[in-house]
Length: 399
Image (tube, rainbow, N blue to C red; front, side, top):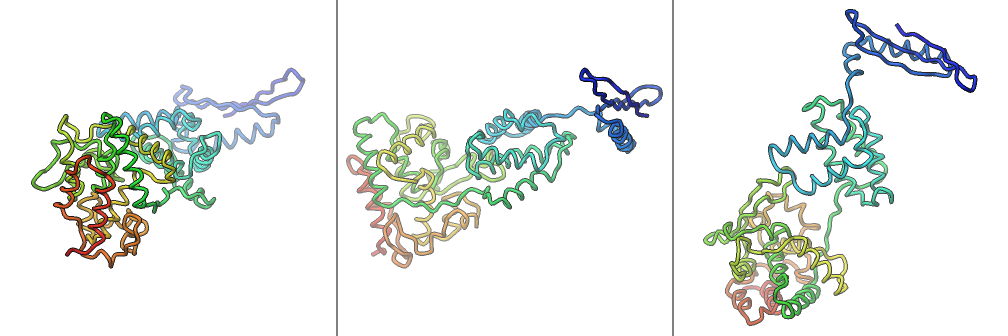
């Protein structure tokens, strides 16, 4: 039974406090109070609240201490990493979210509205001014935590909140999916970049050999971090392939080791690398990325990412009339995932290395390993001559 107590305030006004005490077997198991300016409001609240607490399990739910989003994230990281290591990006993103204001929310307070507000805040100047795609990634990583919080740990999380937030953001006009890129380097751009790196290599032979890194990325179609993880122990000489460990995968990257075939051009570059350690390319991804960005800025080449070399390499294989299974053996894609990897599809008359050569002009064409080997062994490893010879070989039919 609720009790209503009147209290005179310093300004002479009277407030009314409604207090609910519930006992079981002579022991108080729950207590709650609320203060109102009007007695009628206090009485109405008390009747409504007592009715709610009469429902089965209501007292237990009201008595439980909530857990914050930050605490849920910490438990998720602890439990999941017992089974498998998390990717650096996902872990860093979740830890950053836990430190934001949303990390202070209790589990029962996580709803569609607060998730929408969080995404909009992230896209605002105060929240970092990120692109909608980045905000979408934040929601995706947080969604992985919320998806298991109720079933795994009994937290009171609305399972429909995340889906509702994404639906609202789409209705508001925000595209949370990563933008599809169709940027391909022209032959002139590649020649300019490689000539720049050739001059740098001549001045400072101790710097990263970006000539070979760029060429290997282009012809092997490997991602930047994959290039720096390939080890000599993972090279299959008879099969002309390498084992790419922890290949990127939408489901689980860690432990996703895939054998990838090396086209002749990539294989020749790999063979020129000195066996001075365990790694074939003993460089850090950050250093390579920084070098590429600085070179493009210095050479005034706009909007060309290092990852575009992978798309260029895959497009090149299609333009040389390789079928999907054969290209997938190089890129590491699983079957028709290649359809989504090339935008638009490479076989729709797209230029080869920026030169206007349609598919009909290159049927049956393919650079031979003998010619690549000869060029690669030339004194100074001239990158422009090397690349142009590959292009010329791919543009002409076999004679």
